[in-house]
Length: 401
Image (cartoon, rainbow, N blue to C red):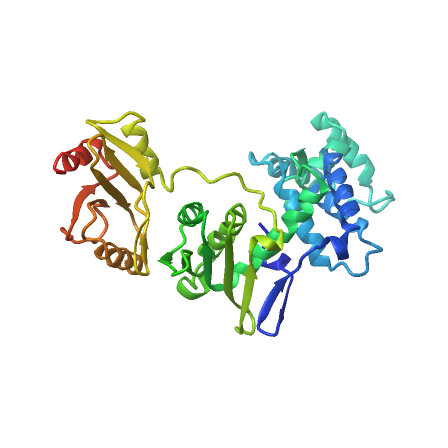
């Protein structure tokens, strides 16, 4: 993703508009994108600095292209690249050897004379001879651990120039969300997928069902609940491409300008034409859930079959989607929710949601470290330390009428 330094957006009349390349105004950018991809495809062995300089040179005559836009393109291209980062520290060791030997000849001069006899070119040849390498190779490796001198070793790239431009548009929208105070998503058909993406991104959310059948998901953003860290803001931005992979939704975010602190609206829907680069979401939201499902297996146990997020509970404006549903051959149905570590406020909201469905049998697998009541009307509590045990769940299911 882009950093705040790459973000370009206009704040006007209470709305925020990220930098957006359109077919009408920026059709010629496809040529630029094709050339940028060629620079990286043919740039194996070149330094990051050289690649960036070549990309910038493409836009020398493009007077309406801001520098930050070009830097953003470089960042997105770097994300698809592999560089030799010299993690073993060979560059630092080489510098130590070269500088120690050169120090013995200090001062070095371009042309030796009676006062200064250490000719730079001759000293370099001597060092190269001692190390058994051409000086050009030594010089190339001296600072290979510095980021701008990292050498490109591989480039997976984008499938087409249009994909690079589409990724740029999404990345600028993501950068806007770093300063989101809140986000509201309305969804229909893909509600469960959107909710799964939100849980994968570890976003704190509340859900309600509207009178028209839509589900409303409200998120508290990084600017409102976790001001001391950018980590949640990154999670918020990561959620956007996942949302774009879904259909039948609309989104409204309240954005606080990071300098003026004015609040502006940012709206999106599938009609805006943004293209997600992400694959479908993983089936499970956490390792705990995946581990439990794997241990349960695909076949029924004592007549109980495990179903992932098999039911959505809703009552008036309350909606709850338990992690699992168990269906018995005899027709009985039991739901299960795994409760891990969340903020106290989030756990309290979850408890309030569960209180709305006392008539529904729900097994609650609660981590030992979580402050949770020992009993809840209509629900059974299973405590776990590191993993939810299948036998503990079966013990509870056997008690089902």
